[in-house]
Amino acid sequence: MAKILFINPVVREEDVPRHIPYGIALLAAIARDDGHQVQVYDANAWRKGFDVVRQVLAADQWDVVAIGGLTTTYNFIKEVCRLAGEHAKDSLLIAGGGFLTSMPREIMSWIPEIDLGVIGEAFVTFPDVLKKIDKGDLDWSKTLGVVHRNDKGNIIVNTERPNINNLDTIPWPAWEFFPLEDIYFKNSSSLFSEEAYYAKRRIDINGSYGCNLICKYCWHLGTTGDMVVRPDPAGNNDVAFTYGRNIRYHSPDYIIEMVKQLKAEFNIDYVNFLDENLMTMDVYSKRTWLKELCEKWIEAGLQPDCRRLGVPFDEVENNGVFWSGTSHASLHRPETLKMMYQAGCTHLVYGLESFDKKILKNLGKGSTPDRNETSVAVCMASGIIPIPNIIIGFPEESFGSVRATIKSLLKLGIHAKPHFATAYPGSEWYYRYKDSIAAQYDGNLEKYVLDLGDATKITATISHKFSCMDLLGLQEIVAQRDLRLLDIAEKHWGQSDETIVATATPQISHNIIQDKTKTPLQK
Image 1 (tube, rainbow, N blue to C red):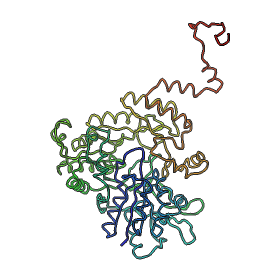
Image 2 (image 1 turned 60 degrees about the horizontal axis):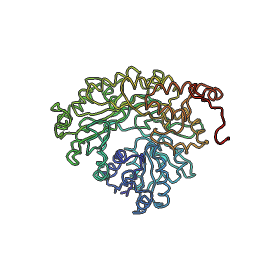
Image 3 (image 1 turned 120 degrees about the vertical axis):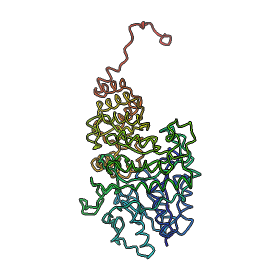
Image 4 (image 1 turned 180 degrees about the vertical axis):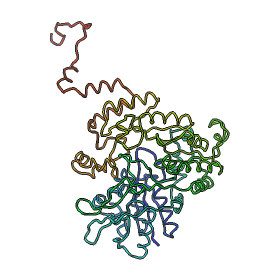
């Protein structure tokens, strides 16, 4: 059996480690249950620097070093792979996750230390790879869902592997490999709701995979049936992302039993659903999935005391488990929200993005400004707090669209510092603006990937109208909800340099007496 080292890369260095790496925890559980020896170094949790990574890589004779993450972790992953090439030379270095699936040919060329990449969903591919390693068979030519190098060193992307149909066949995440007590539980609190703020032992779970929307800024990376492998213009196989959807969810029984176990073993008090969109699952299940989940949450005794008794949060001990997740402005229903609130839901993150009609239509979200505005009031009325996500810098962004967003924020009483529209690899925007993105990084696409963060800073702009400097100013204007500054910026933006200089020249006020006598220095 293989001796495996999983490494979880650092995520959002500007923040404390908040979320257990769910994908790695699932793969660790699968490998453990198959009899392999598993060890995890959670670099995001411990944050001890690359010197400790070197020590971990050299600590044993690993058969496999496995690493994966989102594209925003590429910088860290690249360095870990370089170190693995130095300190774990005899190990097979396997990479996976969004950073590789979104652009496997590029990643394999940029990081030559990677021996094998897993593209798309890894629940079946990874254990199949481990079985071949146990047999000493390193011929990957017929293995579905991988990218590798042939005998000539050429990068080969194999046919995609179909997603599994029954998610309940996946074991629960291997929580025991992660520092829950020392790190993650200590960072349970968040500012999204009163209940979330006072959470002491929060844990994240995934109830479903996928979303039926086709937002052009979003990526799914093979987890929703959207990824296929096709020949590129040069005739080489590469990934392509379609509007195909294979939406799946765990049964409510699977989720409830897992939460009950987490409550019994770790005494958790809060669960955050990592799902892309809970309301998609509600619609896709014909409004049965969330209903059954809420009913069984209550039946299992997981309903917080304040919801059961109908009293304020701070009047009782609350022995149950609060929870939160994601929603969509056009998919939720008042009766569904009421049911979720009763079961313990505290807040839902809404991707409102914009309040401009044209932008929302072109995004493919299936929402409108009116629906966005109504969704906030409907959610608030249920007792659940809506957490809005706002974005600026869309391709069609204009002063008019920014003005529409600010007016709606003022109307709804929302304060939000917007993110920047970012074309992440794997999204429709990325492929549409790929040449422009590369041009903004001196033709070096890897520099862009190295620069990517969580859309709170400017990277490559895709706005047809505004520059990076314009967007930085507009971000602050939206955060301040200042229509006066926006009007001034629009007038200034439309003027020529000569006009700006002329109008900006200060005029001496009529009530200031101009003394034409010489100054003391002139005298």
